[in-house]
Image 1 (tube, one colour):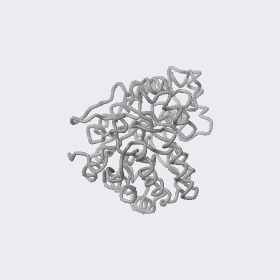
Image 2 (tube, one colour):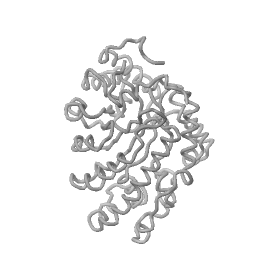
Image 3 (cartoon, one colour):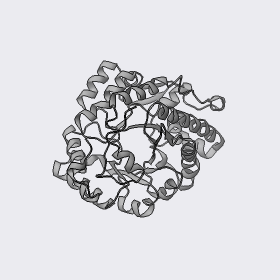
Image 4 (cartoon, one colour):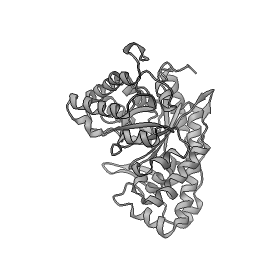
Length: 362
């Protein structure tokens, strides 16, 4: 496969020198882009989009045609893994993801099995391969999966939840059952991410969206411990290249040191964390990714630039920062605000790296 023309993201994740701060956005391929909505309409449904490698490739590339982003991220969904386990994923109009067979019965939890990514998740791996070919080595491709605890929240609740009452009741009343779910899910995610790496993903990310709803002790036992197992089982090199791994827990401020200690290359930060403090606490061990509040993108252009520059200044000089939002981009975000942000980060970050405008990879 072609050598990367722009490997700035990979170098930043590995805390190697870069000419500027690379930027990509969580959910950068999504509903805020009219071309995405047109493709989704052709696909017939969100799952139709995810399960068709051609459509998934198309929407993965759409934001790169508009913005000078430093990475592509596979278009998929974290819930493809429990769907492959046979839980029956579907999307109710206006209600988000749901499972036909949530894990409520002990026998169902005992029977839970690790899916074969080469079979049940072949459509994702085909998309990864197709996207890599389409990128032609322009920028790296990021693969991803949900964390075991986050996936378990959906698997036990049967969908999104306001209070996570069912899964938390299981956590305290029958921790053995939740550990069983997490054990199988951690194995599944490890195999799935390794299969993505073999198919062409050049960095991987674990999304722990709901880890922040746990108590201090429960986070370590039910979320972090299983992410550590995944990190330990990942292929960290493939085809002669290092494969960086990013871990992102929304609401992670209390656990930065703990997350940095599990062996990942980078820690994702939500917008509630001060990136200067995060760098002081863990920046000598891992790279940092983040962490603009996605709502900033609704503000006037000069405010977007000012807020982006604040984060760049807070991180300060040197490498090891990947600029991103503190969570996924909103579907209501104006596309021109994203262009403004990406251009601002590239321009304003030069002073922190000793680079020049001419040194930016195209």
